[in-house]
Length: 116
Length: 112
Image 1 (cartoon, rainbow over the protein chains, first blue to last red):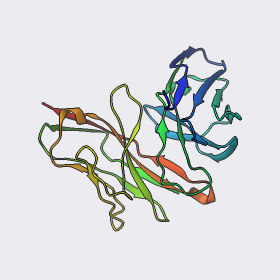
Image 2 (cartoon, helix red, strand yellow):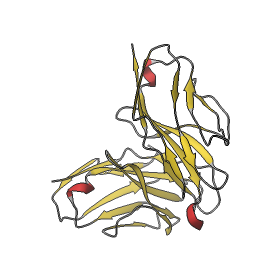
Image 3 (tube, rainbow over the protein chains, first blue to last red):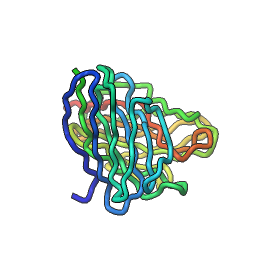
């Protein structure tokens, strides 16, 4: 599969814990984006990385952090988890990053996080 | 700030009926607008973008800058069109990098 992949598919954990979500972009894509999709907030942009560097920040909590590695895969770290962090977390990738692109992003299947 | 509003959370139409999913945006610059679709248990995928003015799966959308709208239309809905539809705007908020802002989505159900 040459598309965006995310692991794990499902994650169940307890409040106060820390988890790491992983994303591998499409081959050749330099930008990785993280989104949170919850019932009450919809699809919220969290953060973008381009070729290893943070490019843009959206509504990302301080308890959350991300990084993009030299092989371009990205990890989203969520710590001190709360019940309200339960959501579907999507990763997307695209070719453009620094230049003004036309916005097509390719999405992964998501990781469903449940905090009990 | 850039904002996308989809006023309808749920929309049901009968098969063969016309369908229109509304999208309004707020953006001070020149926007790039998109419709993404998420079929049940599948990932989001791009349906169409305004700059290409194409028709995908019978859907079209026209950017109306005067009304700041980008409504999605299809003359004859099919059951396989049932999905969640997101309108999205690509812009540069407050000098930051270009970002894609999504609306809250409209769940379309096409009834037999």
